[in-house]
Amino acid sequence: MVRASIIALAAATVIVGLAPTAASAGWWGHRADIRADRRDIRADRFDLRRDRADLRQDFGDLRRDLRFGRRGDIGRDLADVRRDWRDIRSDRRDLRRDRRDLFWDRRGF
Image 1 (cartoon, one colour):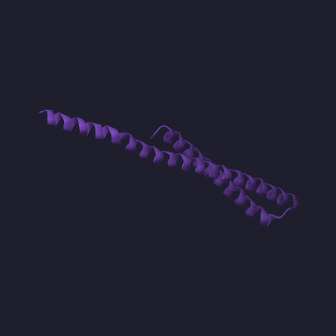
Image 2 (cartoon, one colour):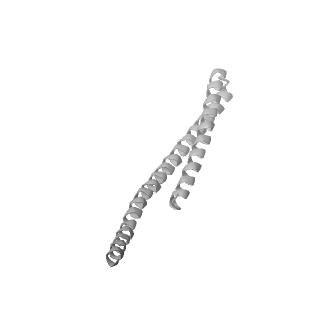
Image 3 (cartoon, one colour):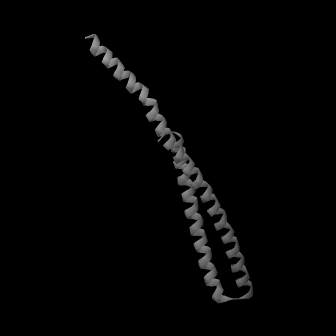
């Protein structure tokens, strides 16, 4: 009887002793997710900045073409402006998703 209780106590000690190791291993994987989300957010901000600069450039081209009456270039410039708006909308959506992922990763989900 005493022997069984000692074995049970030793088993419980081993299980409790290994639990922090498993938890800390999960924590380091969790930290990697947080770092990856931060990297994604930084990349999305850079993409958004680049797409906004492209949009400004394309609007400048469109204004110049309208002013000088280059009708063939106007259609191409409008297509570029639409594509830039689509890219900006996509980058904003990616940024929102990455921020939400970071929020949940910080809380352990």
